[in-house]
Image (cartoon, rainbow, N blue to C red; front, side, top):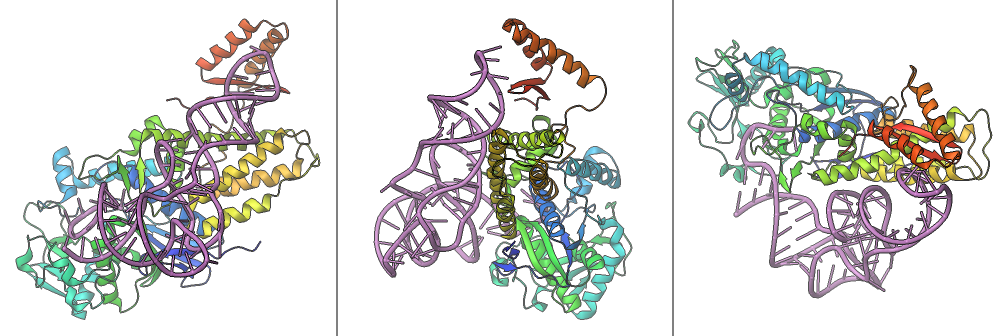
Length: 488
RNA sequence: GGCGCCGUACCCAAGUGGUAAGGGAGAGGUCUGCAAAACCUUUAUGCGGCGGUUCGAAUCCGCCCGGCGCCUCCA
């Protein structure tokens, strides 16, 4: 197949670029993980689904990917000067580490539900204080940082490239800088690498500058470089982290090493609710656990992938319902293919076999164009329709063709997009046990009733089963049953 | 104020120079005892508005209108 090469939109250059990793065949990738002080929301879902797709796709096309995603369990300072982890732990009257543990588990629970592959390494910020202190020492040695009263600040004037990611100059940022702590800094844009701890500060560590805790941006630099090297291929995160977080990461990393930090910066756009940004501070966020009460997590995943990762995604029940209907259509087609395959024997195809390669090419071209999942899904819908046409035809596809079709679903819908896992409850009917034979008895009785035109009786059976969540469908060659997907 | 993004059918949403993908919803049809599922047909001479460049623009440029984000913790 002649395919387009993979191109990725690089936030650093603001253009789409061919993807060429630092080392042939190997990709190092770091993504900013969650701060674990509350349950994850839809926005986290969008972000981590996005990078899951990127990892899955890179692996699918043959790269060996090392995927690192941090867990931030040291709070960052709020406007009030409080630490968000500490604030929440006081509120809930638990130790900050207990809070971190609770919500780290909650996070992974939600990510697992979304069928997001676990990162290869999930480093905790509190587990890398030593590395962070080392990095601060390095920056002090290089003259990019200075210490004041037990706190260490990064000197942005020492970095002539500061602002290259977000496209702003030092002058641009002056006005927006908040006033607190300004007195200690040489320049208002300087940012903290290490903060001295006030007496009541619970999370604190000894350092060459006294007891304190790491600054806002330090952990990502320290941990990404520890596991991926001083230069690596991809760094991802939400658009809201582009400035100042990623800008500062670049500054402190490149000043410390004198080498380019990251080759490709990838930023996902944000989720809106009724057109407004969803964020913790606005309090309008929908947690994933809430969403999962109404919608299958895979539907949420599918919904996210139906818009491009660099577009905003507006969350609404109506949009989710629409996504669910579409998703069920794909599930249904894939299920039918599996079923045909079971009874296909070694039959040869009759009629014109489906040109599967044509769909493969279109799907891969879409993915190669900056991971265009909406386009890729559109290809799956086209494919699905073509498959159904084949299955409905008088001349049936044989084993080989069915396997080729099934492979497309398995590789693209399951392996790459992760929206149709082979073992989804909705895909498989209940296996084993008494269910299948009992269902067969009911279906046989109903078939007999229909033969005798006892439609009231046959409809009663169908209605009562429907109430139990079992759907009957009368086909040409007999009645099929399946479990109903969730309602509403 | 500085930096940036977006505006495509009833809803969601691709498409960045070659004549409007896909999903949902609606309408009609095939099949069916009726349903369901599936399939077929159908729903934007037009992509916020006005100019401009071009043989040709949703796509490039300018202006205007409307919405949003970042500049402060946030995926």
